[in-house]
Image 1 (cartoon, one colour):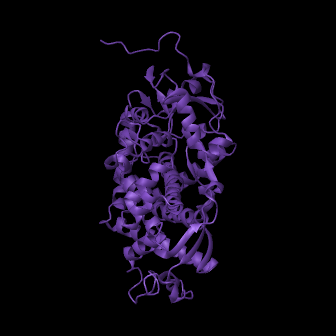
Image 2 (image 1 turned 45 degrees about the horizontal axis):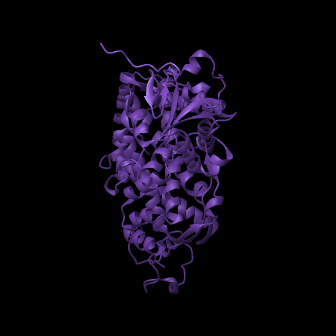
Image 3 (image 1 turned 180 degrees about the horizontal axis):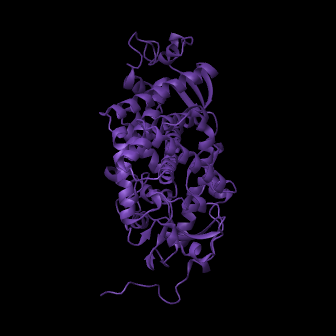
Length: 475
């Protein structure tokens, strides 16, 4: 029987290496530069300090895939973390509260596979556009986008200024979560704020996690007593043995992804369009919305650094030996930089590049299929319908002045300020004055002109013509 390898005597331990803090002002403003410097200094795996804890940051694409795919070596269960088990990690370490929540994301092997199957079964009706639940959810997402644009127009007028985070993406995801979860509106922004604080760390991370969990556990108890056609009820149908506490923890995880990760994916995609990313705009202009999302995620993945893995045994990774119990932080953003630079033995070839992004993870713990399809539908609907409503939209801030929320895991915008001009069709729906016909680029009063057809019939025609004018040289 082969002996498992062990780190050679004299090879450096993580705790003995000089590890500079990852979360610095430089990282906030230029994370790509930080990743590049670490890669140049250490190779595809680098020692860093994360809020005072030593962590291996995995930057190479091949190395990240190895960590994500090899479940026998790289574990998700926080109980493998040696520093936690030995008491050298402070119990109030800012991110620990989130990792202590025992839910699917932090399970391994059969326990993980069973919980994952429950999620896929429960989400399937909502993901399937042919089922009553799926059709209704898709119609609701589209309706919510229209309602939010109408509210924006009523508040700020047919032309003006808007914060697409506060006035579009964040309320949209809260509305979707409210419908999917079947919970009352009064959970609202307080829940979203708690989820942000948990993921960003800091003094409020622990209390915020507790509040969000308590809210989800109350919802689980309510849905057990009064089942409905919603995700909590379908999870109980799929696994009646779930306790209120267990179901609350699973709902908590889903709420994190819907209200934080998906919201960030919407904003990051909108931003790449507004910044003039030619590949992203080209995909959008021809209606390839999923390709638009893929290309935006390659440039700026919402989960820039993915959840921890813990080494089950000594293993060589990059230029270092990782000891059993060490924690590694796989960096999607670092791996994507390598992809786009063409440094990964041909992985960045155009036929594969957009399919190779790690926005949904990879390996046994990648986002479940039903959840991935659902998330894609929400993001593409939010992005596509936004550009159906506007003749013009441009950043109201210099790109280097945008307010990034750059935490240990998520990199997204706190605000996305834009100047906008609604098209004629959307003005009519919001009962606002029409724009002068002379603004039209095509001799018909503009691509957004009302043509007498039923609301919503412009569909992709409006998207295409609007995007053609917004493309460089299209005006």
